[in-house]
Structures are given as C-alpha cells and as structure tokens.
Length: 106
Image 1 (cartoon, one colour):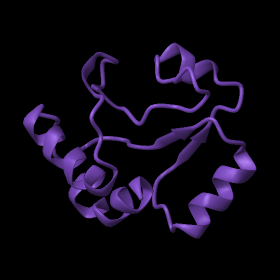
Image 2 (tube, rainbow, N blue to C red):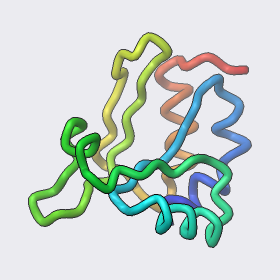
Image 3 (cartoon, helix red, strand yellow):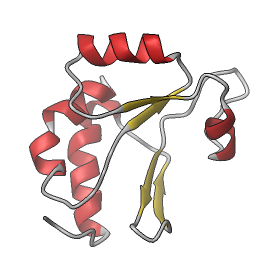
C-alpha cells in the first residue's frame, strides 16, 4: 500500500529536487519482483543483512522493520524522522512535508 501511495504521488514528489526510495530487509530478488508487480517508479533497496535497518533504528524486536520516513538534506543532515507514516497517504504526506521543510523545487 505504501509503495502504491508513493507511485501514485510521483508527480507531486518529483516537483522537488530530491531522490526518494524505499528500503527493505527482503532479498534483491523479492524486492525486484515486488517493484515490478506494483509498477514502482523509484528504487527499492535491499538490506537482507539488516545492518542499515539496525543503524537507522528501524528494526522492531519482533524482526520486522518500522515504516519510518527519513528526510535528509543534500548535506546529509536529517531534517525530520516521520515515525507515524500513514501507508495509504505516504506519497501525499511525503510531498507535503518536503514543502513544509523547505526542500528545493526543481
């Protein structure tokens, strides 16, 4: 559902000069299949070793990842961490928050 929301809001998100992607602890093969099935127009990164997920603090003790969005500027500074992601509205929320944070437009 989150993938679909990002896909469906691509035009709004791409008004900003940003790169966006999803990250998953699933395998490259699983993520490639998932991206194709859902027509994702953005990368889905794979972290099957869970090292990046652990470094970003998104691993839940039950073994799955929390759906958090990190807003990182071009200097690498985290401007916001959204820990209350609504998967149905993730794309619209992403575009809105990019604007609120003052990320540059194209």
